[in-house]
Length: 63
Length: 170
Image (cartoon, rainbow over all chains, first blue to last red):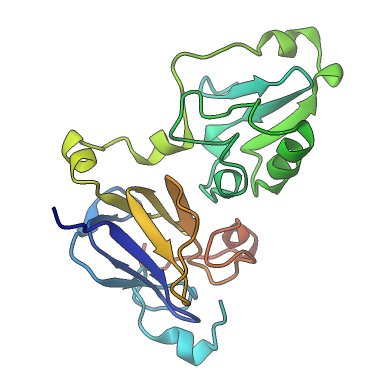
């Protein structure tokens, strides 16, 4: 069987890349997507939360 | 009124108090001391898993009052009597896994939940790798910082509450 374990890759000074077998839910428990890869905002500045919109580059996010 | 889900665990020397309603899933406790705090186990707190000194150190790192501790010698009789073994275990994991189906276990899906004005909480079957490709120690549950302010990146350390992080898309 193909190993499709969910992978969370922390991109340096950028978003969190999620792929593989996962389900993404909002805070109400409603499903957002099962389809990866998705890039989730880590810097707190995205206008498209929970997704990354490239704002980390403008804000000079380090982490 | 006391929350009926509150729990307390003792090793005879100290008692650790667990208040699920205060938990923000920073997951500091399991990342630091899975031998004691393991949400995949019942009961989820094993007071024999580490020294008293180490348990106190990790409890103090909890960013909320979800975990607190006291020396047993400083407790009154009534609170000591509440140190019992529970059958209906409440764990941090059950708070995010209420809708888990058998199929999800079968397919080993990771459940990723975006918390309101808080972190990204993950449980289930998953792997985490850093920017350098190195894998982090695998745990059953973790939470990633979403506010940009954590001092233990990429993980949540509770800073979002201090800085008043607001997700305006909520």
